[in-house]
Amino acid sequence: GYGPLHVGTDIGGSIRLPAGWCGIVGFKPSNGRIPIEPYYTGRCAGPMTRTIDDAALLMRFLSRPDWRDATSLPPETIDWSIAPAHVKGMRIGLMLDAGCGLAPDPQIVAAVEAAAERFAAHGARIVAAPPVLSRPMLEGLDRFWRARLWADLERLPDAARARILPYIAEWAGQGASVSGVEAVRGFGATFEMRAAAARLFQSVDAVLSPTNVVTGFPAEWAGPTDDPARPFEHIAFTVPWNMGEQPALSINCGFARDGMPIGLQIVGPRFADRLVLQLGRAYEAWRGEMPRWPAPPR
Image (cartoon, rainbow, N blue to C red; front, top):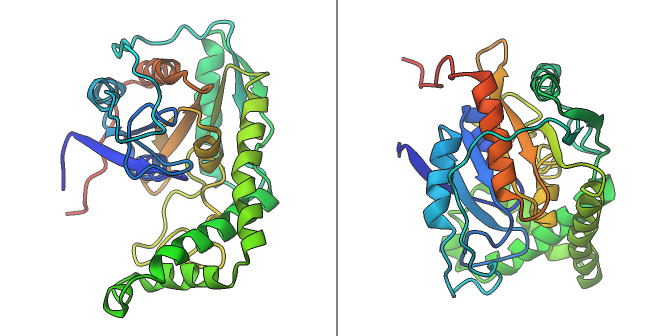
């Protein structure tokens, strides 16, 4: 239902992607900043709100410690009052090529480039950021996730399994044929992403990229490709930061010709959660008030 403050979960982009499509703020903090249960590699929780201030307000409460998450970060007193970042002198990477997956819509590229120009106008140095993801990494992760979900689904009673979305059942069903060696190699892709993401932040202070590669897709589809053989072609800009554990947010940076929102993704080094929110707050101030909030057609 509707509410001004919501919490999402994200293992490959599931906070940021819908936030981008809906024109709101979606923040995936550093892994472990918000305790989550059940915990798993790459899985996070985070706020979904209209503004950066609302997201920061929610972080004050969500980031409190909970012993039930054995992977959570040590308790820390963090000032979640967020002022706009001073970007002068910052080296900010602009990533427009994710390395694989669907190419971003030209309208999205133009909007993200325009957002990067705002950072440059305030003194940031914008440099090209190379992709951190590769086709073998994405396909390895796909095989691992298929096997992982099939391990859960095969234990379900037939009646429960029959209620699963056919698209998901078909995708996960292929996990039955993934060998143990293939699954282990696929899990290894999460560490390859982690290493590549950490390497990138040796040369930049933050990264800007598209959140989504498409401005929308038919409501009847299960995803932007609607193809269980290619289910993750739309997450190439978002999933590396789950596995690398960097904080990342999506904030609206414009609208496509058909009125659909476009999301700018802002990523920071691991544990730099406040910096990412501060960068988002700065961009929010430069952008100004949202001209309109997406609403259901009348």
